[in-house]
Image 1 (cartoon, rainbow, N blue to C red):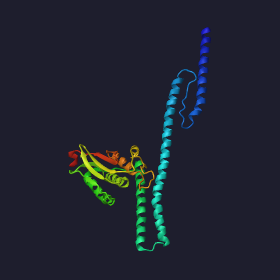
Image 2: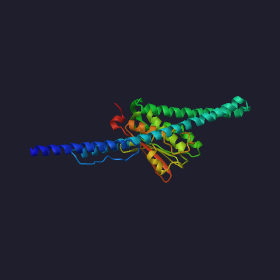
Image 3: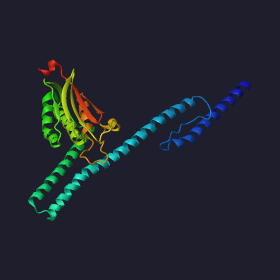
Image 4: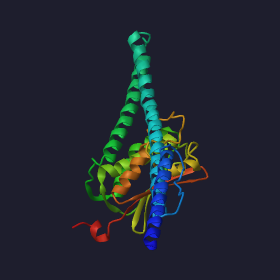
Length: 304
């Protein structure tokens, strides 16, 4: 009889401890609803496996808190990016509208000035169209709507053709680029249009952010082919390097340059989708981007 009474007393004490522990946890749970809190649940008495439960709740709560903080940072970055993109698109359209208004008002009568204004309008509209095309292209890429039609390509020919199309743009900047190409044919398996876009975006990035000392080269390093574009820069700093390939990121915080911050993001996306890699380097004011792809085996290079 005495043993039964002792068991009942012990069971009652244990039940009381459980109730106290649960009440204590319920009081604390409200603190976890607060944003940006590092609050952790604690135990008021050790009973059963409640200590283990509390550790697991704190672990899950910490993970959720980290995810929420990351989501908030990404949302804030996204809002800032949209604001910047809106500014980038609005600026050339506002300029084009101003020139068009002067033409409509009849304040410009000389044929030479009218033609110059029309050329400026056309240029501003072209800038806007290019920005919108990049936005549309990136949106499709992120949604997984782009398909890659890989084929055996002589990357040297494609690279040379793309550089030739931009060569005069560098010359007009007053800095003729040094161009080095592979002497022997070099074949890769890639989507022709996407590979051309990679080369175009690298060259456009150099034109927008570079201030001279342009060097463009294509070289084969063992079993990989590397396309490299480098230039001296006055806007890119070491602190930018970790974000160079982020969407909407631009080192020009004033956003005075004609860029959406999507060009290099697309370069990285396309390169990796086609089995390649990309890296950026800044050394003594020289910014360098290299995209590399695996070279096809000699048998595959010659085709069937």
